[in-house]
Length: 239
Image (tube, rainbow, N blue to C red; front, side, top):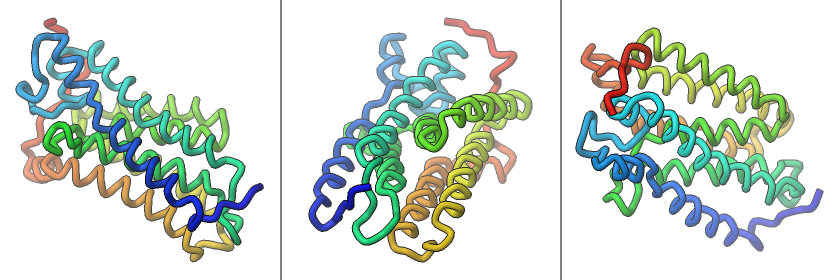
């Protein structure tokens, strides 16, 4: 393993933050809805994301949008891992890739939720967040990918049965976070108070905070019993 000194290479992370943020700003829901001769921001809930795309255009279009957003969140995380997989932070045994993949992913999510080109009013970032975890966790063990696929179907099944899309999304993000956090706790059990380890857990916490902030209106409606249902079984595609 080669050592990475942040004081000499900080600008790489600054550049990565800017690039990943701009990637996050690109909204597939708006693009696809324009091809459908509509603006997804003016129909349904007004949210330019997978749930509203599914409600408005049906399961097939919603699935395409979900997949594209998943890739958008996953590829930068994978890039962070591949670029820094052979490095540790100088003077430590902390893998730079463990920090970099979630650092890259967080800025994609921030760009998706707060895109500068849409007056900082974007989607809720769930598909991109799921994509980040799919790619980031699969870096640990390649066969994690298949477990993640099963878990995604479990989340979809929960949403289909309960019709609570926002709750399913929040539970999914929390579940993937706990999985990754458990791996890091075991890996760095002797260095949990080391600065870079704390920073890694801070990124995982930030991911969840962003998810809750993006869903704050849904949470209020859930508590008030006024949340819109997300029907993925009985809905017919009218397009």
